[in-house]
Amino acid sequence: MSDKIKQRAQNIKRIRLERERAVFMKLGEKIRAYFFTGILVTAPVAITAYIAYKIFLWIDNSVHNLIPPEIIERYNIPMTVPGIGIILLVLFLIFVGMFAAGFIGRFFVHLGDWMVRRLPVVSSVYSLLKKVFETIFDNQGRAFSKCVLLEYPRKGLWTIGFLGAETKGEVKKSLKDDMLNVFVPTTPNPTSGFLIFVPKADVIELKMSVEEGLKFIISCGIVEPEKLGAKIKSKSKKKLFKKSAQKRGN
Image 1: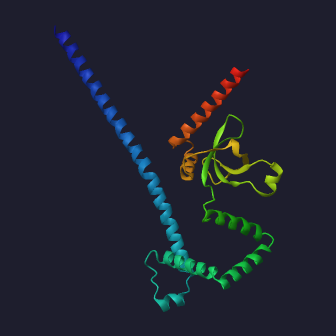
Image 2: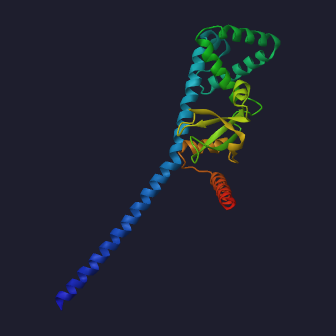
């Protein structure tokens, strides 16, 4: 009788230990999940704030170093207050813009542009940078205005591209069809990619913004906009309907 009581007590103790171990394991899993969730929430904000802070300090210190000491002493420009360099840089750029908008300013801008374009190596770099900045700051909003869906690099494989503009010039004359300039970015670095010329009929315009498309590409498909799946499903349904209709006709 005593052996049975001892065995029963041992079983109760074992079950209690197993339950306590299970409780602690669940608690540990929850704490670990909360920890990684905290990293996912705080890491992007912290890294972005750190990079912005470093860029802010770099610009601020660089502008301070460009100011002659005589001007600093004459106008009593404080060197210890953060942000003075940024303010001076913004004021300088506004002043340059005002000067360049005038008649004399436009003359000197065109003169400088003409001189730089005559330099052998510098001209190519200058032309490329000028085109990039003109595209980014285009007031008419023609720089990557829409996200599009297209089959690339072959039929059956779909990718996201950014719509530039209609194909013009020599390329249009050679292709003869209505084509679009589409930039297909690489993942996860969307700053590199391929410029391809696609017929209008083969391009599907998406409702997602360019920013949503960039997030989707940078995240390697993890951050997926809801509108993209609906577009692909509708396109696939249309293709299946056409195939079934063709089979019935045959």
